[in-house]
Image 1 (tube, rainbow, N blue to C red):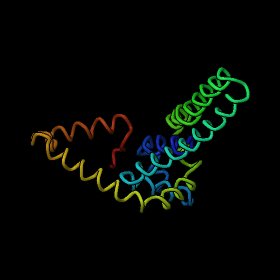
Image 2 (image 1 turned 30 degrees about the horizontal axis):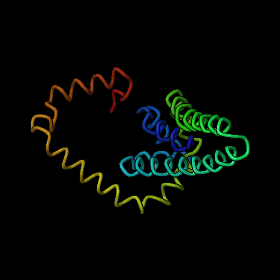
Image 3 (image 1 turned 135 degrees about the horizontal axis):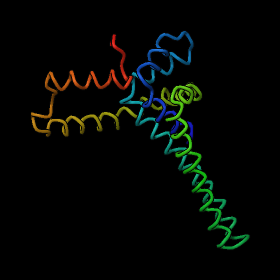
Length: 174
């Protein structure tokens, strides 16, 4: 769970300079991260699906252990174990990896990139249908916006580019 949660946050938190460093890199991991970053629309649902699958497995096992603890030691112990397992999954599977990814997006992206790539390759095809449904819904929602919101005026675009340069999101040459 931490692998998918942390990687998701790190990949979406990579800055333009970090992405440029990866593009310039010669390592296999650098190429994997850049390749995954170019597939964000299909990668995100796949990561969420894999993370949810892992969490369902964890809680299925925790439920079995809780039932056994309840039979052996009573409801109080089973309840305490349930709360502890919930806390551990939420903190170590979601909160901690996301905070770490925000603090060090490139470092966290590198750690599980090969494993995430394998999962993406395994689940990308089955996820095509749900992804297509979501993208179709997005087109419908996008077409329902008022026509004045579909694009930016030239001065708004210039202002956003200037703000991106000032924040370091893009460099002067981009």
